[in-house]
Amino acid sequence: MGRWLRAAGYIPDRVVCSTARRAAQTWQLAQPALGSAPPAVFDDRVYDSDAAQLLDVICRTPAPARTLLVVGHDPALPGLARTLAEAPAARVGSEEQAAVDRMRAKFPTAAVAAFVFRGGWDQLAPGAARLACFVTPRQLRAPGDPGDGSTHVRA
Image (cartoon, rainbow, N blue to C red; front, side):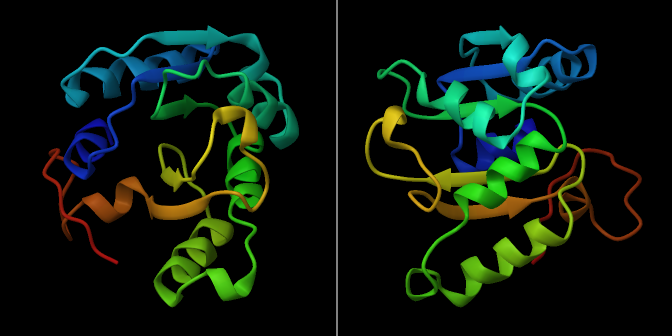
């Protein structure tokens, strides 16, 4: 997923990661593939939170950060993604709606939901962001690929 983030141009300049061992290991695996070493903050609030608490953590991100990566857990992270994806139907195109529907149906381990929005982190709120893409590890594997790391995106 780190290679995908880099290839897609979603290289974070700040990371907020849960203090849980598996989350830290996930970040340690993804970071070298990014080609950069953004500062990572390990925050206990990410470990034991709900979507609203996680949104509060994100809203406190310092202003210089433009791209934030959150490494967290179910149910808070998928819940936050669903909350952020709440948008008036008139604002959502069919491609974006398909990604939202896939994300709502299943948000597997190591999936990436990338959102874009205008404004400062303190202005992030439900419906204020647009789901740019939703990618799962399975989408990045070619049929029959045992996970050799090659990247293939299929929609």
